Amino acid sequence: MMPGVDPRFLRTFVTVVRLASFSAAASELGYTQSAVSQHIAALESDLGTVLLRRRPVEPTAAGERLLEHARPILLRLDAARAEILRFAPAASTRLALGASPLAAMARLAAALERVRRAQPRLDASVRVADTERVAVAVATGEVEAGLVDGIAAPNDPLRLPEGVTLTAVAVAEDPLVAVLPADHPLGGGPPIRLDHLADARWLDAPDVGMLALVAAGHGIALVPERVVDSAVGVTGVPIAAPRVVHRTELLRTGSPSAVVDALAEALGGGSSPR
Amino acid sequence: MMPGVDPRFLRTFVTVVRLASFSAAASELGYTQSAVSQHIAALESDLGTVLLRRRPVEPTAAGERLLEHARPILLRLDAARAEILRFAPAASTRLALGASPLAAMARLAAALERVRRAQPRLDASVRVADTERVAVAVATGEVEAGLVDGIAAPNDPLRLPEGVTLTAVAVAEDPLVAVLPADHPLGGGPPIRLDHLADARWLDAPDVGMLALVAAGHGIALVPERVVDSAVGVTGVPIAAPRVVHRTELLRTGSPSAVVDALAEALGGGSSPR
DNA sequence: CGTGATTACGGTTGACGTAATCATA
DNA sequence: TATGATTACGTCAACCGTAATCACG
Image (cartoon, rainbow over all chains, first blue to last red; front, side, top):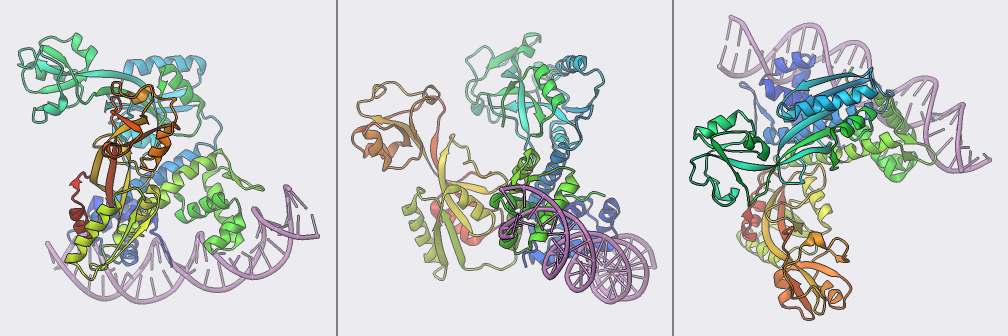
């Protein structure tokens, strides 16, 4: 009567779209070609709409819309499962971490060292990936916590992928300055309004290596203030209008965990719950 | 092998928690007491954790966490279903709307009138409810669109319930002023910083009727600028620090709809997609 | 004891696989 | 014609209801 869209069907649907093939999706998911066909047929009949064009396999407009719902739903479903599973086994000694490359690695190492002093038998490991993958890994329980960074408004949490809800503990927040070649006309002037620079050429990742590019006159970059001090050939110009910071956060799920608590403590985060 | 949390089980779980009873949930959902018990047992066994304490029925800590995932998941599942179902029937003539009470009703009526001139056979209706209910009604397809209002930062969309993703078309945005009794010490002074007023007494809905209360000295209110002009006995003080506006939005799903397009057009929204 | 949750058990539904058929590049 | 999607059909798991049992107030 009210069938309600089986998530398993959604999972095969997104897989079919990703691989653009029923049979490839079947083998990846451990189904037969037939089962996949039946899944898609069930969805299409239930929703009364064609979701895929076949040969070549590609989503219709309705299919595109369904995709935008399906991915966050599946993510959240996995996250829910992973989070509750954490309640079962009493305090494992594993502490797998995710970290995006630019997040303060040295600081993480120091914090881990401090945690290990209290818990010597801790089996800690760190995997490096981009911020989005780290967030998903934390949500789905692949890792216990993640250290990520990014650009945000002051006191605002970083943006996470849709469907991912995690607790963010702010670990660091550095004001950003716009960096210009030393001879740039805007250098040395008053604070810049970012919204007046809409058509300037941007280098948006706060990677120190990029300062060389800026010095060479190839663009404008946003970097933490303190990075600029040690660089030559560039000028740091404070930003007036939309105030932005480079923010580092420890991401964790809502389920209680002594080890993660200890790590958060060691990282010395002023808490900023979401 | 990877069972994956059946949403039907989640639905009975949240119902059981809401009603604090297995049997009540069973009758509401059209199941037997036994089936509900089996649903909860399946979840608990799958997740390896006790989710509910029985007699009285209440969620454990793990159950609480699961609830926070379950509700948005179920909402989103319904939303996905509803949105795709819209693709099936070619242009129904129904236009059910939701509206929160304070949103510009006169303006809505005028816009509807204009839409009906183009489509005389349109079966339009308006249901009034609070903003959250309106948002959910739009997401789940109960209504085609919703007119809502609320307080937000300039250019920021209104906050929607978790799990609800809709397109918001800004219909109006009025700067807010703090309203004080005419004899209030802060009146006539410089712009107020809201963050300096943390412990003042608030009346947070921008309802004109409340100006009377303010005039009588019962609190401080945030209201649209232009409302203050016509009121007596109160002073409007501009706000400096966290700039806030009273925002009115037309909420709609991502699925294309000629009628809703027409309505958005008639309301004259500067588009602000999400 | 009585209300309400759990367990036992059997029937029916429906998801999946095998295999045959159809369609398209 | 070959690769790949669909349809036909049989099987088996699991979901739900009936009914008996258990437990807490």
